[in-house]
Image 1 (cartoon, rainbow over the protein chains, first blue to last red):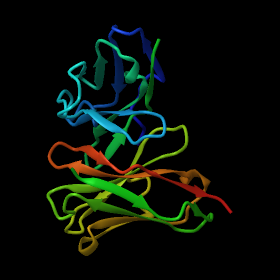
Image 2: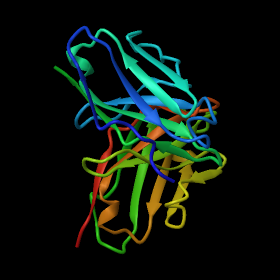
Image 3: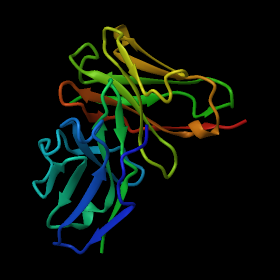
Length: 110
Length: 119
């Protein structure tokens, strides 16, 4: 199966908001509410920021939010901070006990 | 707070078998979680390899299924990955992770271990 489609890069100035999209199909993103988002700093393991489309694990700032419309999920980071600069990956259940990731988006804080 | 730690050879010869173990601490591998392997080639995206439940039930990425075996060792609170017939394309950082049941996301990750396939 193909990876979910994310823009290679996104950027914003401190304090601004940025939205990263994740496009799949009706067999994955559009078919299930099991979309999660991961933040990965260089050389580090991924960290979950959003699960089940829009839920935040404890400890994740409420500046991070998630949503979904049809086959596209989105991650919005509001009030950008320098420490938000990282790679972000979406992930979706794809049916038949299978999981797929997106290609990743490099977020730059200008 | 559960912690995961990968271990295994950092270099594997082409056509050989990659073998890694993930030790789980701070929690029981017999809890109601699935346990997964995810890999990331240098500079590339994450790829789910597969998962195992403490009962031994497994699910694998269809693209890797013919070469992957994941097993569990409850007595040592760990699970393992074997990937056969490796090529340079299997060079990656390999992570083990815990899957939250019913919500299908990875909430705890190991630090990752780089495995290079080269002669």
